[in-house]
Image 1 (cartoon, rainbow, N blue to C red):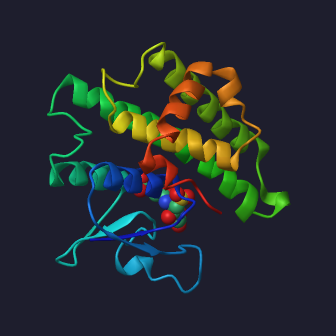
Image 2 (image 1 turned 90 degrees about the vertical axis):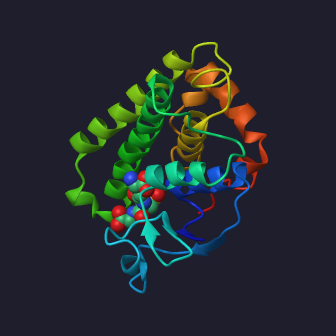
Length: 203
Ligand code: GSF
């Protein structure tokens, strides 16, 4: 398997963490989707990473589809339970974490890709509101539990850890760790896992 991705993308990180937790072998191929030379569209018509290219040449995206597939590839470190309430809860955590990222990335693109006179403060504020509310919802759902969903480490923790790590990386001015000590505790614990330690975002 080949994973097309970047070292900064939180969605790519989610997939890399899952590959590491599941102890699956793969080749990581760096792809700069913003470069005029990118060939990402040959594998993903949406021009986005992560994209998983399988042994038979078939390609798969987006990150939530890839991680679901990877979890079926080995019984090691099961991250998503069988269909039912618990699975839906974990997928909902993932949707929340990815949704926070989607909003944060829209803010970043607005600030970095558009000339200042075309940037909309109203739009940026709307997206930042989703980041703030999303993080607050994570904190309140986590409460004093050790993990996001149920009693063990799952895809919910992977997704939340990648989202919080990306916020710390790209938006240090968002003080989620100070505002939500329970998220800070979870993040510290996740950061000790080799899967997280080996995938710290790099610009
Ligand atoms: C999001 C992937 C994405 O936006 C997923 O895989 O979960 N829902 C998708 N990837 C970004 C890189 S990053 O900001 O993480 C991407 O490839 N953007 C290129 C573009 O043209 O939007």
